[in-house]
Length: 280
Image (cartoon, rainbow, N blue to C red; front, side):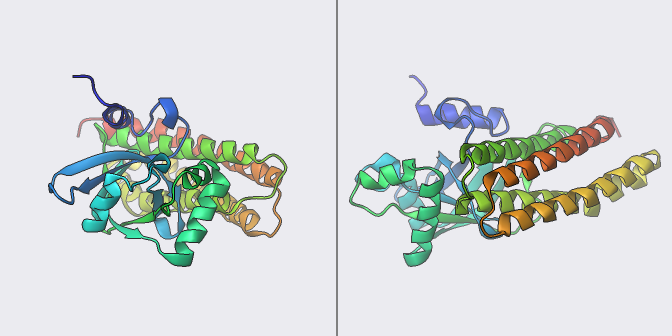
């Protein structure tokens, strides 16, 4: 029996650390696993998503403008505890259906960033639900990778993809002013990079320093690079937050950040992956 389209996307996503081709290529994609409202069985669905504040992400129950809500939406209304796979990260989350003005603002952001959402809404009489997926804190995230070195590379590749996505979104706006969702995407990237560096300095760097004192100079350089990147991230956030920021100004800032981030990631991989992959 031929594999259905969703299952093909799911398998490609899991095999390639969140990268897929076809209609989802070059977009933000996650896998959402819900519990069947009637069957109690677990069901996984690939969905596009929008970054939101406080680390949560938004999904829209569009069903391409169909007259009825998709099954995954009915499932999470009945059982809001879900599993999210985002790139190489897997985490448990709580699904919260946005209501009233909050829903309307979120949907307006989505439609501004991608008019396809508005087209789906125009095809149906139902109000397309917007759902926030809020991570449930529970220790370090589960990373799907074959080894510690592969995990580090996969996380870095996730940042590379997000930077490329954001750059493409900014370039597509021409010389216009920034949209609200684009600002949100940039802020989410800044927070993600900050959290990654904070985690490295609190956990991985001290551990490697204890077991491999010869890495001392390299780790010192990486910490200094973190400080430099933190300054660039702060400058980027200032540009994002300024009224009337032109997209060309933001594009220049993102290009500057991208170059520095890529140099840092490449150096970190060169220094750390051989150590992480070496037998104890």
